[in-house]
Image (spheres, rainbow, N blue to C red):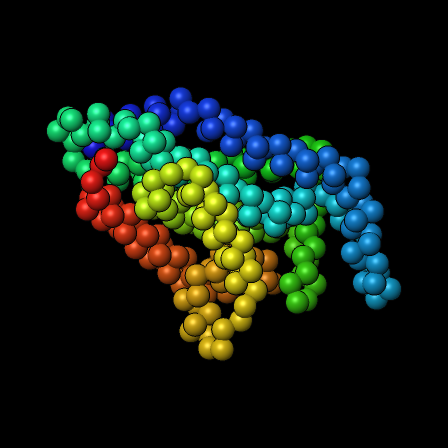
Length: 276
């Protein structure tokens, strides 16, 4: 099993799309920094213009903590799409290049082979989010400094710099679980469709519908708790004044359940289907 995992990591490093994907993610991050640097103050003033009639704001509101929060909001659509393209490609490319037949001329277990791809995809996803978090904090603090974080979620919430940093770290950790789900789903879609273009189109459509449905309120609380699109916004709960820990833990456990079910479905499909 370890040999298969090492081989999959080697394949991932050799794929050009892996580095294109990383470059795309950090390019988006750079664009957000540039926009914030030149126009962030004006945008923030426009957003808070009505509130300034009621509240007195002192200090620099456009700071590294706010910028990192903005990155969290702006990248949770782009990151899963890019990850889904890269990770689904690890299996669709093998189907299209007919390399799977060569692999299974050797005594390789089908479930171990595909499970190794899932493991590598999950690790890659965690590393990408970790790199994004490190670069977001590093560059936002370097160019914009530290400061209090102001967030509007129904009410206006203020967090001092230290508290804001801790909440942002927890938000990245929570968001990582969501990104893992999308990565696992993309590999399962790749197993089902076998072709890169079909898989990417379905993945993009899934993301669009997923984000639209996340705005839908189900009639019962229990339905909202189990409704998959709602779970993707769990990271936002860390920016309520009183963090709803029980709700967060429950959502993450349910999301892990969905990840496990999606992975099992992918493994079962791969085992039952012919390689050719």
